[in-house]
Amino acid sequence: MKNIATWFFVTGASFALIGMAWGIQMSATQNHTLSPAHGHLNLIGFVAMSVFGTYYALTPQAAASRLAKIHFALTVAAVVILVPGIAMAISGSGESLAKGGSVLAVLAMALFVYTAARNGVGQAERAALAPGKIHMEPAE
Image 1 (cartoon, rainbow, N blue to C red):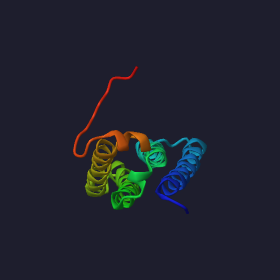
Image 2 (image 1 turned 60 degrees about the vertical axis):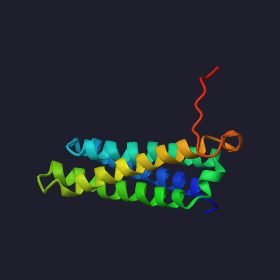
Image 3 (image 1 turned 135 degrees about the horizontal axis):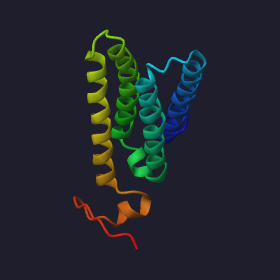
């Protein structure tokens, strides 16, 4: 794959396919007990990863950073740990995995906040920012 944005999109779409298959399975069995885990798979695994991929596609200087790779790994780890953790918590097998995955998900979002604040959005905005300053202008 070419760049981090592609990794986010392909992985996010893969999580979406898994979520769709899981949703079909829940519908076919009429057992929706694990729907909270399914929802988190779709929300973090597809929606958040797609938003992150879009950001990195629009902001190549952020995509080229080492933090982008860390962000990707952290987000994947959050999904892979949180979703089964929620399923385990629902089934009464313990909440430790769900708690750990939740912390990873929060860290992934915090890293995104930092990255967006540091780089802005798009190539032109980064060039216009003074070093060390965050500029926020109202939308027109």
